[in-house]
Length: 220
Length: 220
Image (cartoon, rainbow over the protein chains, first blue to last red):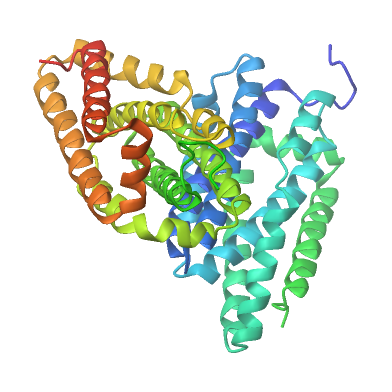
């Protein structure tokens, strides 16, 4: 008997947490490598600190997967290919691209966490809200991107194009996840109510993304 | 007027903290990359978690450098070449080599922190004792190395040789630091009392290292 009429199946929640946990592990991995692109030690350390924070979130997610009686490694395995695929196709070639990727990626990830939190039971809802990124991370990225554009407006088009490519790749990998993982798709569809609501969710994510682009002057 | 007959000069302390901070930043960088050598996601995450912990120590050290009125980046710069040099000459080629490096490196670093803490004023002494590694890190490395040796005793010689090379490179870079950074050398020499005591300090570090090698079965 479900504890709540809309209580998601444990299997779906483990799938979701497994996807998020592997996402954190790879975000750590890629950001720690991207930190080498920094122009100085202060900035390199800043991105390294942001990378390290992903591992604290990883640990929270894995602890919850274990608590639910599942094996974290098994929960993550199904998402390795798709998440690696996203990052392989979006490896930043310089410091600014790495910052735009962190800014775009963290922003969409946090919005997704907030949306998905409303579909979960209290414990997992709290967890989803705990693993949001600190504001000072996006503030650092915003300041760096704005300063770079102010310094050289010619980078704007290139970075705007890069941001669009990041979102395009993310959507394409998200579609792959939805097609391959029925239980995850059902969690979102049943949680939101119907397929039209899923469309609305994606629309909200894209709207918030667009506002973030305006914030840094990349919505041209 | 010094606050204490043996109170080290602020310049020496900033040098020391700068060296330690850059050491943490690079330990993070290298361990996060070495994590990719792990045979599975669980072990990869474990090394990533250990890497992330280095950034927390980095932040503590940098906060103290700032508190002392110095610029963290300037404090670190003089040690970039020598610390990068150590890591460039000791890049692990596989998972076991990366674990032996973490085990050997963390062990010697922690012993050095403990020794140097006794030479510092209370605030910096506490800091040096706070940035020690968690025991569960070395326990993980010990368990992995012992299991690998039990599984295939043929790796013992190769890993013992690797551990000796790590210590050899570390000593050679330490000599370079001592030769290039008078204020650091003076901190140790004045703090311990005389040059003979410095020799004793190094002897204690090597003795403790030798005991750690015995613990994992690499002291052949």
